[in-house]
Length: 355
Image (tube, rainbow, N blue to C red; front, side, top):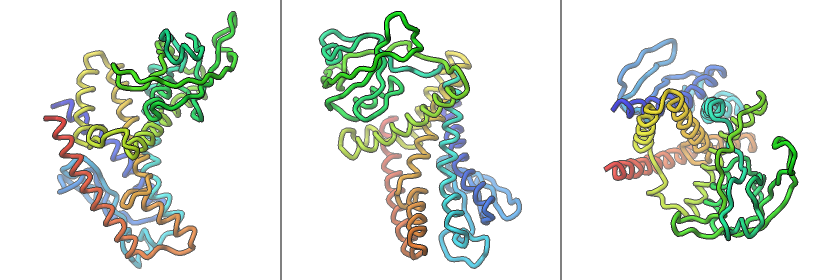
């Protein structure tokens, strides 16, 4: 139970970061904030300071930053809709951006501990597509088709999201006798991954092992940390594409707050057996994954999400006048209804998996 509470706490922190982004930029733009809350449903406790009520609600999944005149016309100069379009864009975008900043901080913790996993080949399966294409242990992959390869995880992700696709693989082969830090000879190979019945996936026939590199300077450290955030973003986008293409089943791939908290709790429980450093890495990894995913999902142009609201604001920017508030409100209301239906379905799916 203690570890489930740890999962809830981590989820709550990520939501807090998101809503604090909205709250901070609302205050910076002199927009009145009616209520800043963590959680959903009835209030557990609250207090009022200045113009704002600060609340903690009973369901720890979600939160809100309710602003004056956010959804309706209001003559108050401090109303959201009376501010400039760029001020409103900054307020709405701040939530997802703060999530990405928090994800970067978590990534820094991970990189400081374990470094960066390089895409250097350790072994080649005899007779595999990679073997036939002439790849050798020690080769460093740099690009597959049009995607840059910075980590061995990039290779696995690309193979999973582009099953059976012919690959043009660019790589660097180390020059014998030179330092491993030097750039190798650039080469190109073409191969087609083959389906592996045991692992039920398309594979090149290569393995990566133990090629972790610690950052040598602050710029390299930042670069490795930014890569971790980028990888989470690309994973989210590829995952959505695979859902639309029918390559993944919704019930198997979509997890809601209940399922996420359960998984976080289980991994934290296992991690504490291995010591404080491992536990910290697990918490940072979940923080990175959840915060980056929440940030990107909220930027999607879906009604009721931040991305949907940003879409209307950019339309206003291009038109020079706002979209009819009543029509925009109807779109967001319909989007919220659909999202609530989806949340109910996801909740039942989470419970089914746990039983």
